[in-house]
Length: 369
Image 1 (cartoon, one colour):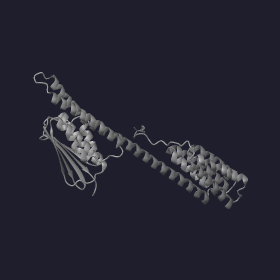
Image 2: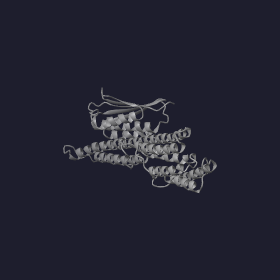
Image 3: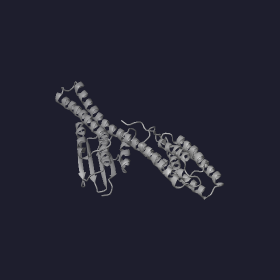
Image 4: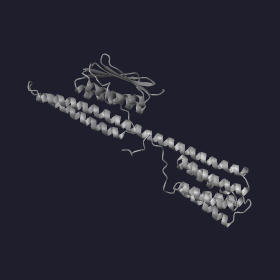
């Protein structure tokens, strides 16, 4: 369903875009116009002639492919810039494409590679300026400041991209865990009901001491059929709403159908004033109740069970109790850990009590009113 993402332990790896974006083309053309205009308006010691314009154009236009070959473009720009500055053309005019090239390398490459490439470029540019000006003056220090700013901005962008990539991987992981829990809760509940009812049917068929009760067998098989149909419909609904959970708590009493079919008397109680709930809280409450009832059917010899739902302005509390004496669900399995993860996932907590039966209490905050 999802493409396999990098694991959480893997660092963010920049992916170079092998296509030239239209906006990069516009950026390159805009920079070229700026460089040529700047060069003609600020002639410095040597006016921008045809040779200078060609050098400036050759050093600027490759910016169009900056995302495809970042370091190559930076090296090309630096090499042509050396020739440009050595011939004493207007130095500041070629600053904008240099800043863009440095920024791109810092953004698209790992920190070490970017620092090496950008460091060498800055060193070459400063050396040329020092030779041309017979030393590093105020202008050279200003140039260093602009170059450093571009590198720092690029590194900041790279770190932000790294953080975003980690958050994306975590979201995918959380989504997969949620899907796994949903499928586990759904299938475990249904399979348990089928197993119990199939056992009853098998016992009735093989019990030679009693007359064959066809009505009871038919009822048992109908329960199995209903459980299968319900599971299929809920599985389809689960797949359809994985990314946009729909309200399910009003249908929670439907879970009692298959529980009653196993001979357990179950009641549902609502207290407080119901109000719209966050979808993740509503789904968590529903699945906790479903898993608790599945555990009662599988592991308990209970004859009665009760589900209580308490609504408050800031929280939803669900309590599931039974009068069984044989649970065995607090050790092993995915039921209790899964319910605990669901509660923690929405900022709540789960409490288990085994005195006088089995009680599961989930307190789920719903936010401030």
